[in-house]
Length: 502
Image (cartoon, rainbow, N blue to C red; front, side, top):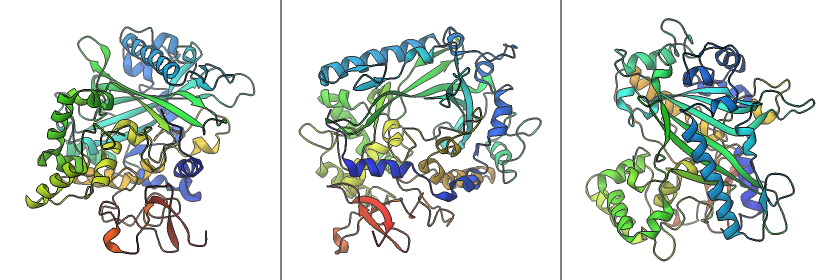
């Protein structure tokens, strides 16, 4: 693996994770689409939405189940086995590729591993950190009206005296079907419950937002774990690697099984198999699939997907092997050539299809990355997460935990709420989304002037003096008045909006 990006890329990553001073007042952005209030989450975690009660609804104990007990459950045994296997493979790859850099648990190592004993400890548990409505994903799960996600943060239950770091760098996302099997309620009714008031209506009880979900709605678990951290040294800039996994729930066997990750293209397997490479190229460049790919609603067949991914951060904007799909359009043996993409775009245009985002090979390559789980997590996140949640257990939460989510999350709320409104009103929703770095406005000016869209720190495109030189996929990525776009890499013209005097 090549050396991590330089200083500019690091500054970019830090600024992308930073929120403007008004961020703490921007709770309205997630109105009707998420529950982020600390007091509310504390109350819900004490009731049926505590993780062990969701997984074991028959459990009546008031004391939360520690992770030592959680991972001893038959349903969770495959989860532990799969995570342990990923750790072993990660360590083996490191020793093979970076034999001169030590790896292990503790500050004495070049790469500092996450201490797995904390994950399976009697002193830790997963605490409810947020609830997110993802009915904007109804296109992927029409029968269940999309998803509701309960997001839990790994937390020490008995932290040492004077230790403020009770939260550990891992989230567990319990993905629920918004509408359970056999339920007579409509998607319109569910959306209406969430949009009933500026804060989304009541939480529980008759007609409450959360009244319809329970153990029977469980679809899968998604995990995001900071597997290792490398501090800045004489041989590299700092880097942090995140392990992403998905486990699908088998309701009859009552067990979570390792599963392919949605749209996580298996780069290594594709590049090593010419037959699979040709098949994937033909599938993705088919006009119908290309349109879905452009709009961010593509569902890539599982035969092309991986069951795990490492997302290194920071990545920067120039192409590098830290990006999940680097090599699919770069170098010898690539899956797609520029001529392939240009021909596919031309064919789509001749067929009367107007693409919304991909108008060039560069746009196609960017979408290859941000349609994946790991590529999306590398974009405008907070330390590798899009939803770390607020630490309601802390006596004095730090600035990093007061803001519950990343700029990417907040920038997408307008689109999600627009889809909820369409579902509520019985209209056909527009499920399309822009690039992960640049959200869609959807006719709203709510994001204008903020770092979520075109304000200070927003992602932008450096415009050339000749209009013809501007890439069609990014030429609309301009900055608000008084700001100018400054390139953040040596090759790419993607940059960030700063004041003109800088």
